[in-house]
Image 1 (spheres, one colour):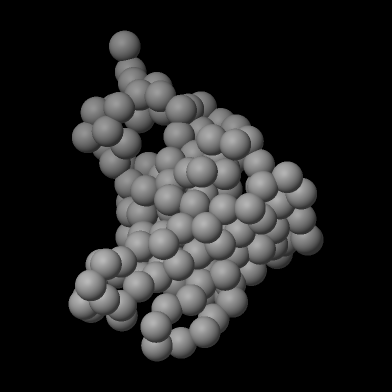
Image 2 (cartoon, one colour; image 1 turned 90 degrees about the vertical axis):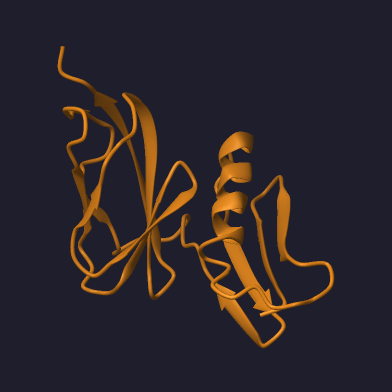
Length: 152
């Protein structure tokens, strides 16, 4: 794969992200959903906007991905619940889960964590506020915000 791009827009903004090597040499292991998409989501988070459409292109294929943020969503993060506060001891995990049986890609604050078919275990580094995003193989996404507190 020589390069990966993602682009998205809403009613006010258009954002494009290009990731790759200037000389066109391959970047094994770099995929738009893991590299370009999280960067783009961070830009939209900074702008306080929600992307309507995201497209992925690379030198070997033409694909379109849809973030269905303004449409009815059947794909949901089931754990943790949206806008909750969790008391998590140091070095303990938080289980992330959706209502999907597909493979799910997980992001926290726009950073790719990994993928899972069932629950994903995430160890928060610090107390604070986090945005958790899940994307399934049908390119549906859901996001929830949580606050992590440490036991006194």
